[in-house]
Each structure stands twice: as structure tokens, then as C-alpha cells.
Length: 310
Figure 1: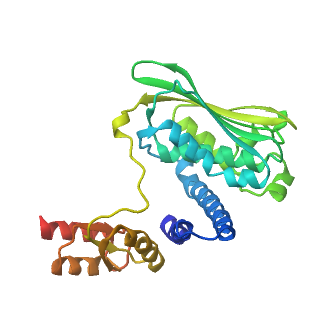
Figure 2 (figure 1 turned 60 degrees about the horizontal axis):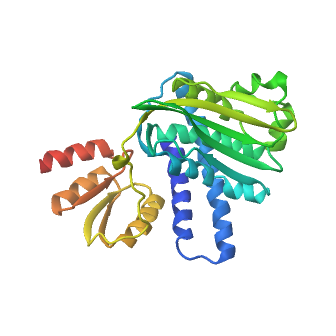
Figure 3 (figure 1 turned 90 degrees about the vertical axis):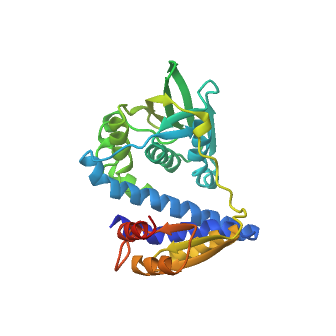
């Protein structure tokens, strides 16, 4: 189900990014940015729903990698800048320059946590600001405690509702869903993810004046040399011969739109059987293999290709 839901959404997001790079008119760019926001919000909602059962069973594995913490924080904010701008809100990042450049964290999960908190802050704030603060609490030779705080000048949370809002499918008031939308899953999932990372999500709020959600992660200091570099949107791969194996036509179109800018020779296959046959007849320097496909999936196709080649 995860695959079937995410596959068409991948095509929507990929096509949107492609069109934004095709020098659209200003009015078109504005609409594409709105489409980008909507699709990313939908992806966040889908991730929450699909992750809910895994989180309830505490069946989540964390994959920690080297991350440029400042860039990571800016990226988390940037996802909501247009939504905030449309409401006349100020988006602010307060970043502690004493923090190490590189830390090890699960980029996907911490991004999911910040996205849920920032999305709520923008949703429930009609004037003023939304602020992400990333500060150092203490540091040793190999580890650093980093506090993440999301502050807003929104509607706030009443004292009697400050525990209930962290329950699954719950919001502070019955009218909240009608007025603001949402599933009531975001804070519940955020709280559980943070607890599984060995931390605690806390709340300070004054009803009618705003809220601050915050948590502290004990992180390993990373290696700056191993921080992944941003991928260029266009560069020359010198005619590299690539086989793209993908059963979804829209995803193939999106991939081709990207890869055609990189000066490659691209062949496509719709399933694992076709991929194996093409590899028998031709030499490819690189294979991009989908995993879930009819007739023969990517795992089996990869196994057979390796047996043929090695």
C-alpha cells in the first residue's frame, strides 16, 4: 500500500520540480510553487498515516548519517516559507553558530518531526511569526546536545488540552478539524518518534498568544568530510550508458526529464524480465532498478544480473 500510494505522488512532485526548472513565467512559477507546497503537504500526511502502525508497534529503525545541521535546519524552514508568506507570517531561523557543522542524525525522521511541528505552527498562526531555534545545550569531545524549538504567535493551547493533543486522532477542540483541517496524527507521531530517539517533546503555551514545542537530541558529532554534497540539477555525464527499469510510465517520464539534461544514453525496461534480457544483449555502465514490479521484481532481477556478470 505504501508503494501504491507514494508512486503517483512521486510523479506529481517530480514533474513539478522539472517544470520549475524550465524557466516558467512568473505567474506559472507562482502556481507551481503552490502545487509544490500542496504535494509536499500531502506527502507529509501520507507519511504520517503509513508510519502510524509502525510507530505504534515501535517498529522503526533509525539510520543516522552525517548532516550539515545548519543547511538541514534551513531546508526544514524553507518547506513552509510560501505557506507562511501567503498568510503574512514571518519565518525565522535562530541558529547557534557554536554548534558543530556536522552531526549524525536520522535525516528523514528528524525532518518529519520538524515538518509536523512547523506545519502546525503555520496552520494555527494568523499573524506574527513562526520561529525555529536550534541551540547547543552542552558539548563533549564526541557528542553534542542540540535543542530544537518551534515557536509561534498563534492561538495557543489551553491548559486542560495540553496532554490530550498528543493522543492519536485528537485535536484540542472539536471545531479545530473543521476550521483548520488535519488528522490529529502529527503531534502523536512526533511525540512517539522523539521518545524512540531517547528524548522528550515538551510544550510551553499561553492560550491566545502562542506556543513553543521543543525537544533535545543527544547527537554524535559527525565528519564534515562525509557530508553529502548537493546534487547539481544539470551536468555532463559524457554519454554514460544507463538502463532505467521502472514499470510506472509517469515515473519513467519524470526520470527521463531529469536524465536527459545530463548527456546520457538511456534505455528503459518495464520489468525485471525485460531488464535481464536487455543486459544479456548490451553493456550498461549503470542500472537504475525499481523494486516492486510485475513478472519479476527488482530484487530477483538484480540477483540474476549479478549472477550473469560476476
